[in-house]
Structures are given as structure tokens and as C-alpha cells.
Length: 499
Image 1 (tube, helix red, strand yellow):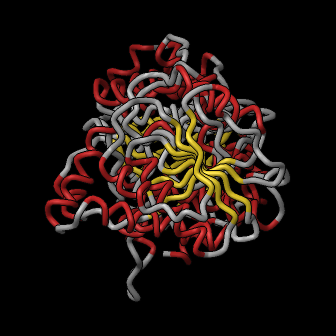
Image 2 (cartoon, one colour; image 1 turned 180 degrees about the vertical axis):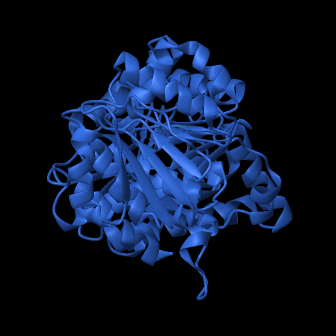
């Protein structure tokens, strides 16, 4: 699923109107009908509704919803927020057709702003995705009143005041939504933590915009859905054998941190590798042999940390980092492995921290290698602390392009930054994954997929999706708070069943 700029979204509407063809007023009716259907299906117990409408097409959507909800016997009140003197033609037409039984008030000054009833649900239709400057005047007063009321808020398409495709600095003048019903696709700004309180629970409502536009229009931003993950997935054939699914090597562990490489190994095994080998310090040998009998364990000569390199020819993919530490001898061994690699590798945890302290290593990392930093690890790689997520993402994308690697910037809606400039946001996962060991499991999944001859970008995108979806299954069984990384690994198989 492509994500679009505010201008591209406007163009998509125009393209649909021209090529379907359909009158703009009828497209508004169709969109509002879909939105109303969502409300009827999900919020029908909430009968008292206050709809705040701007005088543009977002407000027009609100007017149609008011009419349709009123027809379903909801108690609907409409408040028209006059932030200008030139209402859109479709807004004006729908205002004229608003049934007289609907209480419609006009807000032109502060005294017109209502006191909201105790049990009302607010539907926010003041501004749509095209806003380009912070709200001010009477609109700001209305937004402030709604936010201070603490009433449940549903924003239509996007929270009023929130920019669609760039950083919003005016946090106190944006609607704080409990639910956002985004038309057709998510908006870029909805995927960043700064805007969490302005987005709330995100739902996509399809309104039938022209599919040809989506196919023909370029974007560097994508949203990985279950459908797009399914397209990457490679089902197995009846006569396939283990030799077709690669031989993965994982390198990690140090005294006190053997659990990290054990988690990575278990997740690699669950990802479907034909064979899995693991290099650990000798203190971890018996642990791996006992807990991961399907893996082949290679004991490093050192008891407490990795000191030796190894021949890499037998392996189709290599993952380095879980629990390795930063011992001087380990640094030399890891550099040697990276230097000898003749195919993309996966780097996480202290492998990334070693890279941040030894920038010359960039010259020996194979192209299309996959790096999986969380925010802190990325900022160490970039040598800068970023004020906002937009700037951080832009820097990650630039690094991916400059270094010809794949950067997986972990977090909610994890962003996979590709060397060609594309950025793929993930749709799965929950805060239950925000725990130690979660990144180790992700490294195991991605390395396992890479070893099975998935292309590096496929392994990255699909691996992130599987990891998040397994976390969703795990949290649904117990709770977000109680999920452990072992629970996530145990649910990887359910994700594959879903394909």
C-alpha cells in the first residue's frame, strides 16, 4: 500500500472524479456512507453525536454523515466552524440538503462554541488532509474546547490541524483524537510517535478511489499490509528438501548474555531455515545444545566471549550481534567475519554499537546488508540526536542510500529504509514487543528468511511483518504487559499459517 502526500491525495480525488467518472458530490456521498457504515458497525451504542464541520469538503463529509446518522435515529447536532468566507460547492450543497430536524449551529465567534453534553461523541470534520498552516482564530478556539472537554473524538480522514506529510510543531492546536478514520490509506504523519495522541486508534476506510491512480502514481513511502506480506511469502512445494532452505549462521553471546543468542536461534529455526548453526562462547555451548537441539552449536575457544572467526563458505546467510558484547578480541573477530562475507549479512545490537565506534567498518560491509537499530543505536550510528521522528527517518533513509544497505529503524510502525530510497512502514506489532530480547528474535527471523534465498529487501520487510504479527498473536492470548519474547517466537508459526 502506497502512502501519499497531501497534494497526491487531492489529485487522487480529482483523478477518480474524472476517470470513473463520478460527480464530486456523489464521491462525497459515497465516502460519507462508508464512514457512517463504520460508525454503525462499531459505535452504534453511542447515540448522541456532535459533528464539527469546517466549510471545506471535510466538513461536507460531516454533513452527509449527519444526515445519514439522523436517518438511523441517532441524536445528531451539527456545528459549522466558519474559518473563512468561501465554503466549497459540495459543502454548500450538502448544507442546503441538511434535514431541518437536525440542530445546526454556526460558530463564528467564541460565544458560539457550545458546552458539549456529557454523553456526546464528537466527530471532527473541521479540516482534512490539505491543511498547510497551524489553525488560528476561531478554529483554534474550537479545537482547544474539544480537547479540553475530554469527550471521545473520532476524526474523519485526519485530526484537524495535523499536517499530512511533514512535521507538526503546533502540538497544542491539533485535535486529540481517540479514533481516526483515514480515507483509503494511512497518512504519513499518523505513523510517528509524536502524533500518537492526535491519531488514537487508526482505521482505514476504503471509499473506492480509482485503483489506476494508485498503480500509476509513484511514492517512496509504503505500508506493509497482510496482502503485501503474502505476496512476498514463498510457499513450499511437496518435494522440497532441507537443502533448498539454506544454512544460516548466527554469531553471538557472551557471559551473562547467552539468552540473547538463544532467542535469535529459536526464531531462526521457526522462520523455516533448512539448517542453523550458532557460534557462541564455550560458556553457552551446553545451554544452546539443551534448548535448541535442532541447531548445530559451535563453541568458541574462549569461555566468556567470541574471539575466533570462522569459514563462511557453507552459509547462505549470517546474523551477528545478539549478546556479543564489545570486548577487544570480539571486535577483531567480528571485523574479520564481516570482512570475509561475500553476501549480505544481518547486524544487530552490539554489532551495531561496534560499527558506530569503528566507522571504517562501513567500507567492508557487503551491499544490501541489513542493519536493525533501535532509535538509540541509530543515533549512535549517525552521531546525532534527532529532535523529531521525521528528521530521524530522513537520516536513516539517506544512510541506507549512501551506504547501500537496508536500515530497519525499529519502533512502532518500524520503518524499513531501502537503498533505492523506498521506505516501508510496518502495520503489525504492539507495545508488548518493547522488551529485552525482542530485537534478538527479529534478527533470527530476518537471517532465517535471508538464508532461504529471500532477497534482502524481502527478508527485511517480511521479517518485520512476521515479528510484529507474532507479537499481536501473543498479546491477544495473555496481555501486552505479560508477553515475553519466547511467547512471540512460539507464535511465529501462526503467522505462516495465515499466509
